[in-house]
Length: 108
Image (cartoon, rainbow, N blue to C red; front, side, top):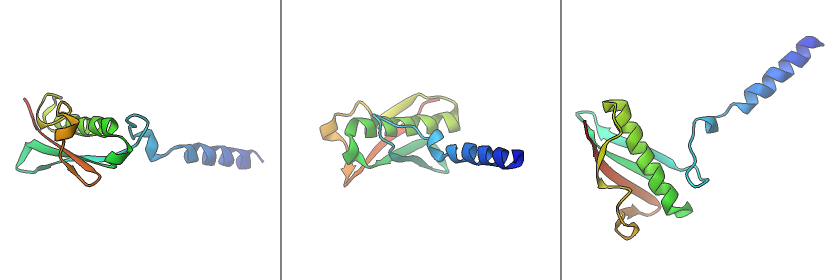
């Protein structure tokens, strides 16, 4: 009987573990986002966010977050010179359908 209870508890504990534990919500929304750069030049990157229609401010924050993660991973710094970034007015943002793209350069 103890074994059954123990296995049930372990099963419930494992069910509580999910990918959402490592995801970050922006304005209460989870956005699909990433940052990509050419292998030969990781300083210059593009951060892309899908699902902009769920909230432009949250999408901008998600793109900025991905850019910061990228620069920290490859250069150990969060300093970014944005070509198109969080300070860009919403009316000037490059939207392609429901996708937003920021571009920047990691500053060493």
